[in-house]
Amino acid sequence: INVKEGGFGVNDIELPSDVGEFIMDRARRAAEITKQMSEKQKERIAETYRKDMDRGADSETIRAMTHDVLLFGDSAFEATQGDSEEST
Image 1 (cartoon, rainbow, N blue to C red):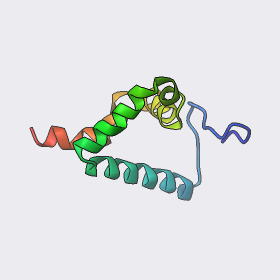
Image 2 (tube, rainbow, N blue to C red):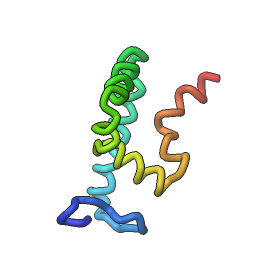
Image 3 (cartoon, one colour):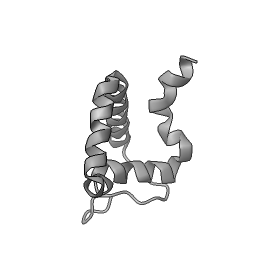
Image 4 (spheres, one colour):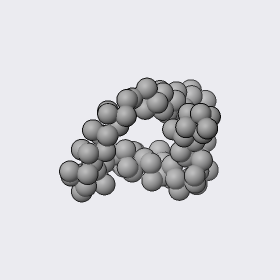
């Protein structure tokens, strides 16, 4: 962890198992919350991003998603795509 900027590098890293479990738990919780959102809620969030694209582009959410895609490619989206693929 970079103390001055609070981020991980893109190379392989080692973490104590408790830290890794905490991060994975939070990611699972975020994915579960997203799955439970109604289409109306998702559209309101999307509309908020569209209204202020610069703010959205600079958000921590977008930064985290960018890093996930760099590290994991398309599999970074598997947690949010599972329901739609299972229902087809």
